[in-house]
Length: 381
Image 1 (cartoon, rainbow, N blue to C red):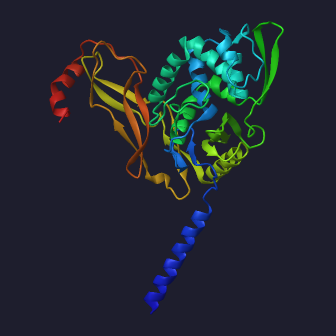
Image 2 (image 1 turned 90 degrees about the vertical axis):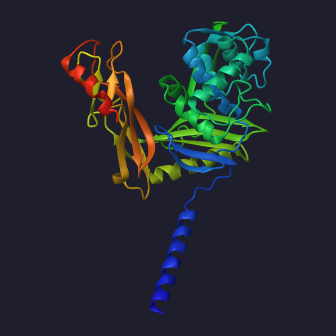
Image 3 (image 1 turned 180 degrees about the horizontal axis):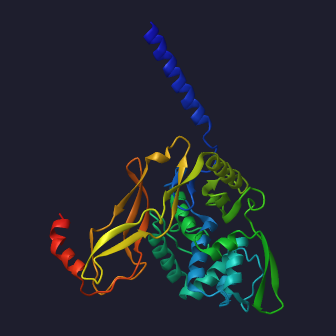
């Protein structure tokens, strides 16, 4: 009886614990959502994150990061009749207007200028179709798994879709760009036309979390009837930066509540710990065909890793994806990538950092390098 009673109590405690954990789950009304840590992309919470939806104006994250990479800030962006006729001419464009690339990107991100996004696309690629191809190529490079973009602004199109998980991947990439970060963290600013010179406009960011949610620093709103309420939201508190994506919220207000609930959930449960330290994880590799027989390599950068409640930092280990012998070839430059430091949690890889040469090695002869060549077959076994 005593054993049976103990078993019953144990089961009750487990059930109560499971109920408490379930009760702590964020209440999200959006059809799809995901919460990630911004530097590593680690998923903290998700709901239907791989379900296809129209991304609406969150599309403009990809448009604007491409514009920042392809254009110089003072480059002139011209409007035309097609751009002016695009839905929601919020800034009263005419086909004679022109504006700097930086100000146009600012308008597209802050007030979701659809015609401005088209003008950027045409300036960069010559046509909307060719720019869409650039967008899809970039999305693949970023690591998107189920996205296809047909236009630069997110207006409804049956061939224009993404997922919360892919939008998070794009957001992580975009927020690594300092100019992008500065623009999306701007609550209010003004832009000025190149032509006509006297024309200007004050812009107020459509992201209502800026200035209202502690630590909010981006990113992009989205709304169409087909897509529902969408939002890519980011916030940073101390060393922790989180990105929340919500897609197809019931209305334009609910998306902000959903994102805030997700961010709250993350900040309550995530802590950052040092996973890879470039000063402490130096390694030596043998060199074949060089004037030096060995070379020091180290991680290119430090990496902090997010751990969630209940996870133990002692389970973090670093392994090395690095050849035992490096062939100099024509020479090894300082900073050249030679392998990867792999951060593992409980044996599973969770993050990677490039391993780079700490010094330059010229091709040539040295007695030590000759010995390395001789013993290379044995080291490779």
